[in-house]
Length: 117
Image (cartoon, rainbow, N blue to C red):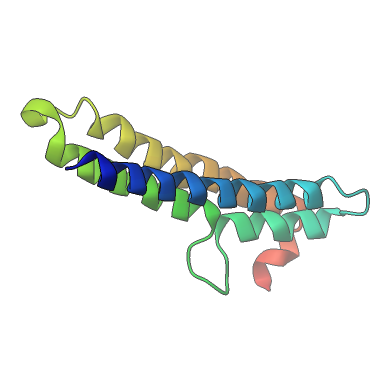
């Protein structure tokens, strides 16, 4: 691949990460608001784990991106030995299985009735 195409792709990724960082900063600002109660915090946590309007949520989408990197690593890693792809697959699983599940547990603890909505 030519350096120009790689540079353009990397520039797009950097710009996308910058946009995501701005969005996440807004979420953090909202979480730090003095008037956030348990019910609202639980709702925010649920949105991070599984957005009801757009299937996925933040954690599953991050896991999807990491999984895409793992699949690409499988194709290009030397000897197809898994040295790059296995840690990426594990990171994706940690995002959904561990981090995502813990968000769900925290949300249930803060607002058990919110699961019924």
